[in-house]
Image (cartoon, rainbow, N blue to C red; front, side, top):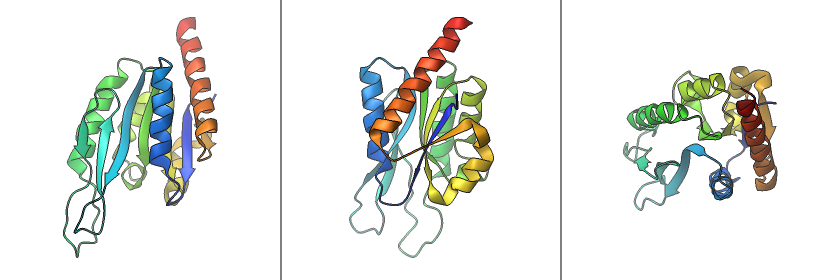
Length: 177
């Protein structure tokens, strides 16, 4: 089975609420899910919304975006937040959850940073991963994940079905060892 499930999406397709809804259903069914969800809040007076990462396991919210000023054209992501969140997730993977959920495979991951080490550890431990992949980074994702990835539509039913199948398979393999 392909243990990496990539929801490929375009701007405006609402991948964050979809992932959050799937996580809510899986947790209600008793699945051990770790990872991060992304939330945005309006930021009056600024051109862009503020972005936050929510740790699924402990509910902690970390601000992902940084205020760079109105004329800035640099990346708004705070690398310290990504590093802190990555470190926490690497520790959580030692608990062997049923599923790892990551909000994005983006520029940082495409360049070998961001959540890349978390993805690699999950793969080594054979923990299924659900991740959002914007069309812009699809080629980089395909280069990284190759044949181990399953492309998922922006559809909660199909994403949930893939997650449940991946969790069942992971549990079966764990029980066999």
